[in-house]
Figure 1 (cartoon, rainbow, N blue to C red):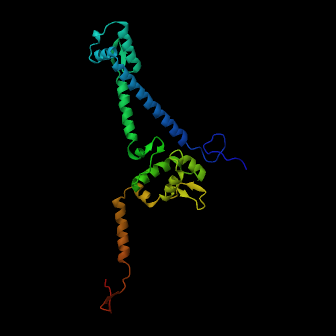
Figure 2 (figure 1 turned 30 degrees about the vertical axis):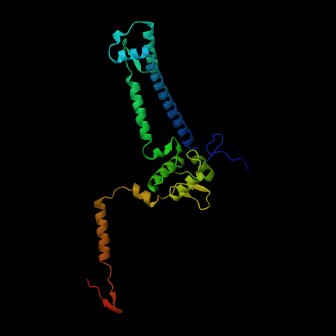
Figure 3 (figure 1 turned 180 degrees about the vertical axis):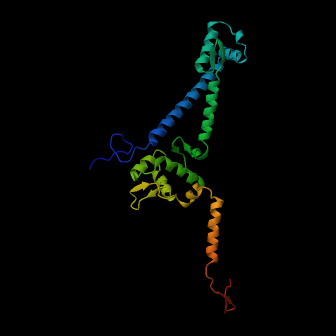
Length: 252
C-alpha cells in the first residue's frame, strides 16, 4: 500500500482537483496584512514628521498655499523631500501639493475593511472562524459560507480531505462537519466515507432561493384545483348528538 498524500499536495496525481481555498485565502490574508502594515507604517511616518518642527512648518505652508514663504535652504528642501518620500506631498511643475491619492487609498481601505466586517464576515478574521453565532439563522448563513468555500459541485471528498479543508477555517473540524451535515448543506454517505453536495437542497434553502411566483400562472392552477374538489362525489355526513347518530345526506 502506498502512502497517502494530501489532496492539496502538488507532488501526487489525484482525481480530486486541488482546492484553491488554502492558497487563495493565504494570499489574500498576506496581501491584506501587508496593506495594513504599509498603511500603519505610513501614518507612523506622518506622525513622526509632524513632531518635527521644521517639517511641520514646511507642510503647513504648502497646505496654506504659501509655499513662496519657504526658505530656499537645503534643510527646507530636505523637509519637503521627506514629505514626498512619505507620500503626503507631491511635486507638480515646481509646485508642492497634497497627495490626494494617499488620502483616497486610505479611505477606500477603511471602507473595504468595514464592508468585510459586515454580514457573515463579522464572525471571521481573515479565513479563520472566530466562533459560531448563537442565532440559528446566523449560524446557517455562516455554515453556508463555509460550505461554499470548501466543497464544490461534482466533488466527492473523504473525511480526511474535508477535515483538511475545514482546518483552514477552524480547529474543531468535527463540529463544523457535524453542523454541515445537520443543516443539510453537505450529504454524507451512509457509511460515512464520502462527503458531497446534496442532490437536492433542503426545503428552507429551496424556499429562500425560489423565484417569485407569477400570478398569471398560479391562477389557472388554482382554478383547476378548485374544479377537481367541486367534482368529488359527496358522501352522507354522520353527526352524533347525545349518544344518538343522525345522518344527513349532502346535497349538491
